[in-house]
Length: 431
Image 1 (cartoon, rainbow, N blue to C red):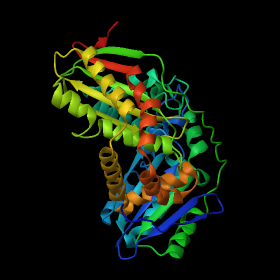
Image 2 (image 1 turned 90 degrees about the horizontal axis):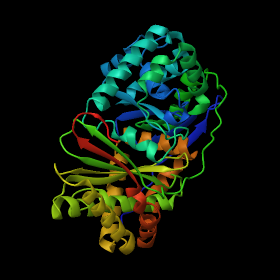
Image 3 (image 1 turned 30 degrees about the horizontal axis):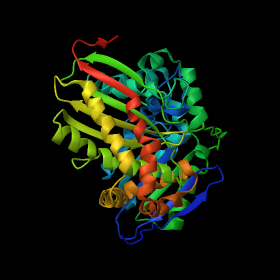
Image 4 (image 1 turned 120 degrees about the horizontal axis):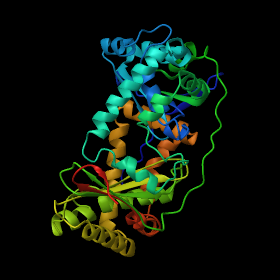
């Protein structure tokens, strides 16, 4: 068993509610800033999908003291890198740079937190809707199989569920939205008391907190939104299937799976994640060995997990079949693989390898200031406790064969009940 790994974490909350977590690494020479807002696609109204992702773009369009584009230009000009992402549960903004550039990064983040409203104009709003439309076109609408995830979610979550739609956004909803609606969304979520700031790397703890106080303490706390999370839905018991014909090179199937909710002590999700890795991750996985190597009915096959906090996490399995292959036979093979795994559970060696791979992935992420800052923000925001980070490895190492087998029986076995099938041909929905 690997040695225990723990990272120094010191947390303080500013008077305006901003949670700040500092994790020093002396001698690193670089520092990472990571700001998570408790707003993602699950916070959106079903008829206004895409607001959180839209703000990921709008937040780079300038603020009271920063011109549009200068956030990138100033930090990159000082050797920094930066970006932002939006998911179901959160939006994060992050920078990594030489340690001496920390003040600039904090000032920039604080200015757009406090003063984005100064540049929240109809012109900026309309321009960024166009940018989101281009992003969606490039990543989804004009990519083979690009919209399958969007087609799969309704099979396991209804339109009112927090995870009933993707973060990328619905272009019709954004086109119909008014500037007043966009401004109200910003006012509801983008405030100190709804955010976590992590500072990791070449920093002195007291100095880092002093800088955070200098740049952020003047910002009004706002009225923190209430966190209301739904209860966990059980695995899908009845078959749900959708068929589409699209201009794709080969037939394919996606299976969507309700999984246990993510939580600090979520042994069930950890077990399901390890089971998913054994069944569907890499060329040694059960699905790959059965469908690609043995049966030769698939070009690729895999399974993965998206850990989420609003009632359920999300699993997704996919098989890209050999052209001309009967998809019913592919589904039967997938069901057989899952059935055997649920009946037999993992071998000791399979579980050891899955644990080792998960541990390596985690340590790789923690090996950079940017990766650790992101993980710290996640634990602080989603679980209200950054020290959950230091318990992840021990949780992972403690999961037993019986727990993985039980997770397979309770959750993974139901994967075949939600299918999206994509058939090559002229685009259109099949009856």
